[in-house]
Structures are given as C-alpha cells and as structure tokens.
Amino acid sequence: MTRLADGRFVDDEPFDPRASILELERKDLDAPNWLLVWRKFKTHKLGLISGIFLLVAYLMIPFAGFIAPYGPNQRFSEHLYSPPQSIKLFHEGEFVGPFVYPMTSEANLETFQWEFSPDTSRPLKLEFFCEGKTYNLAGIIESNRHLFCATEEATIFILGSDRLGRDIFSRVSYGAQLSLTVGLIGISVSFVLGIFFGSLAGYFGGKTDWLINRVIEVLRSLPELPLWLALSAAVPSNWSPVAVFFVISIILGILDWPGLARSVRAKFLSLREEEYVRAAEMMGASSGRVIRKHLLPNFMSHLIASATLSIPAMILGETALSFLGLGLRAPAVSWGVMLNDAQNLASIEIYPWTAIPMLPIVIVVLAFNFLGDGLRDSLDPYQQ
Image (cartoon, rainbow, N blue to C red; front, side):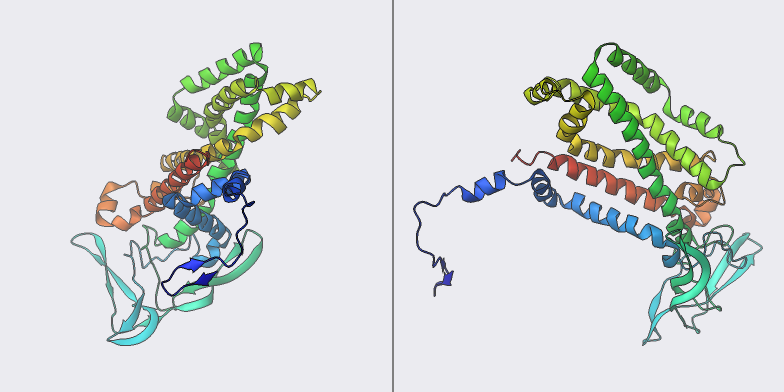
C-alpha cells in the first residue's frame, strides 16, 4: 500500500480481474461456528465485561486465603462491629505509602453501642506478603502468606467487622469458595439429568415420553421453596459442613432439571425428523450415537447459554436456605451464612456494613444474567 499526498492509500499490487470480489465474504461464511459466536459476543459489551469479571472471580477462588488478611473465623474481641477502615497514602501532606490509623473502641453506656475513633497521630504502614493465619492454598498447599496485613498494633477491616469481631472482607473472600461453587455443582447435576431424560423423551417418544412428562409435571407442580426447606431439614445436623455443602448442591440440581428436560425434549422432537438424522439411522448408527453425535451438538450453544442463566438461581437458592438456617451452617462460611448473622434489622440500622455480603450476591447474579444474555444473542451469528 502506498500513501498519496492527499492521504489516500493505493494498492501496489496489479489488478487481477479473475479475483473474486466475494472472497472476504466467502471466508466469513466458511468460518467455524465458535469464531462467528465469538465475533458476535464481542459486540455485547455488558456480556463481555461480565464474562471477564466472572472468569477473574472464579480464578481467585483457590487464592481466597492469600487475598484475605485474616482467617474466616478469626475474632478480635476488642473490635466488635468495627466500621470499615480506609487505606490512606498521605499523612499530614506527606506521602507515607499504604497505611491505616489504629482504631480504639469504647462502649457507650448511654446508647449501648460501640464507638470507634482512629488515632490520626500514628500512621501504621501495611505489610505485604506477610505471615498470618495458616490456610490451604487451592485446598492442597499449606501456607501462612497473605497479600497484605496490618501490624500487630493495628487492624485492617476494609469492610468492617461483624458482631463477633470477624473481618467481613476476609469472610466474603472465603465465602465465595462455597457460594460460587454450589452453582457449578448444582448445574452439573441438573444438566446430566435434564439432558438424559429430555433426550429419552424427545427421541423415543411414546410411553417413554408420556412417563417422563408426567414425572416432570409432578415435580413442577410442587411449591419450590417449601420443598427446598423440607429436603434441607432432612439433612442430619451432625454432618460436616463439606457433606452438607454437597448435599445442598445435589438437592438444588435435582429440583432444577425438569425445565431443561422440557427444552431438550422439544428440540429433539423437531430434530429427529431431519434428513441427516434419518440418514444416520439408516446407516446403522445406534440411538446413543445419533443423540451424542447428531442431535446434541446442534443446540449445545443453547445449553451453554441456559447454564449461565441457571447458575444464578442455584446461588440464590443456597443463599436463601443458608439465610433461613437450613442450608450451610457455621463454621462453614458462605454469603448466605453471613447474611444469616445479619438478620437483626436493628443491628443493620446501627451497623449497616454487616449487610455488605448482600452486594457480592447481587453483583454475581447480575453478571451471570448479562453473560447469559450475551451468549443467547450470539448463538445465531447469521441473523444480521
């Protein structure tokens, strides 16, 4: 390419009358499906930003202990209901670096509230990659290194502390491990059951379709929340938090599969009469191979979008059960368990930062919804 004096560009290659003017368009039409979906998805800004945010959030889950300055159940008896502390850089006009002011607490016997006041004369610098509470990195490697922490004379409560003097930021970081994972386990169970029974009903039809549809109708006619409560209450109270976590995840998955099964059934009913399906059957392909190789791949992108829209329901289900005291229980740490500690409206009115665990739930659910909308709009790259 040569640039002329007036700013235009001229192609130096000789003119070829045999070159197809549709070469670029042909190349686009021959592009693989995933590339077309990605090109369309990139134009959905909210979906793209939400996807990046969720990817970073899930990648940080194994490093929750490293990011949190304290342990999830580490208590500070002199800092009950401590307000959020701000990290400052300048002290009296002079750059000091990241530091906090030490907090002093005193009980007000007239209002029966804790009153905190920072000592602005003593800036205490934060320490990075410091030693603290022992934790298991990625659940395997034992370590006591933390990204940042305060000196022994100070505390660092970025989001404040709760009624037992536990750091809310640390508990939110640890709570993400359970609250974000419960959706993945639940949706895995739901997808296995929904695809299996939906495939059987849609492909074989007849009595199989009738029986599966009756089971789906019975399950969908049951009130969801009371059924959750009944099944969760049946979990023995002496089980470990890990066992309760997996049982709650499986319960949420089992109760969520009927909707997906109906979608799969409807799609199979329309696809099983296609010529390529009949051709595969005539060539001797088994029913399982036809379902796996010819039917499921045709709407796998739809299933992926459906999964991103179902995971928030799983997260909200675990949060609701834990909030009511029938899901995960202490000493397990999840966002629902943290909200269970903030049920007292009088305490929230006085100490509003105790309701902060509600914010990551709202943000994550919105991010999943935006991501699902972006994927759903990108499933048909040829629509424009």
